[in-house]
Length: 420
Image (cartoon, rainbow, N blue to C red):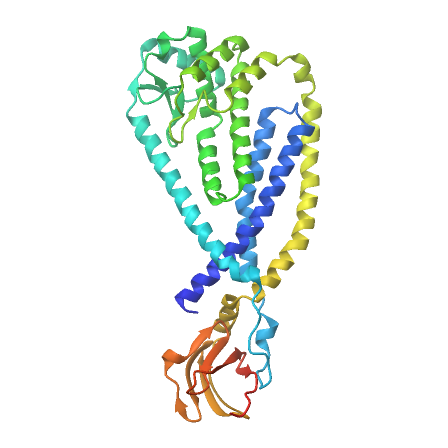
């Protein structure tokens, strides 16, 4: 295969893989929406783990689909001995014709998303390095909150004039960044709550998880359901951190008041960092103030139902796979890129001397490519031989007419020409 044909084959596979990931994402989004409705009392950490796990599964399914496509068996229609009277071309399905263009759009969009992620990671690391040491009192409070949360390493806490809310950034070495003069606008208990929230992100390794999540979002940039899943993961992550903070004994009202105060003065979270005011702060505050023992008592039933629902989703997954994958296999079989790939794999060099009612012609083939031809002893210049997949178009006469020859295993076939 030529470089251009190899690129077309790759884009064809990528395009079909993106199409299959689309219905996978739709099913995951529908399942998570149903699970949230059917098990509203499930703890955020369980919903977060389920949503993130299914989100991580989407690119794996796309890769599996692409690998499955590359192992397609050879098209039986291309492996028959060629004789005059055979069909001159294989009709290309609309899906096979559009898939390479979809694959190209996917590659361009994904490249842009990954470039944006890399820029954010570099910016977050630069922001971490520009921070200044905090005062002794804030450092002492941060150490105390880290001990409550069970962090083994002493947290790195700095101040920065570039952030408007407490945030954590730095993928390799997470660092808590505090706005300057924050301690003068909050009571000590509120500062403790915000420090605990950022350190909860560090304990849960949320920065690494969010970077992976952003990478998957770049792969699925085209799908609105993927964006909904990503927003759901962000929300459950913040709620999980809130639960972790309050589990250490932090008063709910004090913590809720600190979140509300930060939300009123925040600008935006720094790049890839995670801020205390991230997500739907109003929802988080209402949940902190409304949470009670009755809600906690229903958690066990919610968890039990939450783990039964994936079985139902996997069943639907299996049915959709059985129905849709064979359809895409059939579409790929008609693609010229697959025909060229099959011919290249067959290999071999041969020359055919053919005769039909219109006269005699020859065709030389090398590894599936037409490298020479002649009609009635007159050599055809290579520039006038056009090949698309297994179909070779040869000029038939001085009037600009042509006819199509199809290369098959060890020979050719074409529609018999009428005497001219």
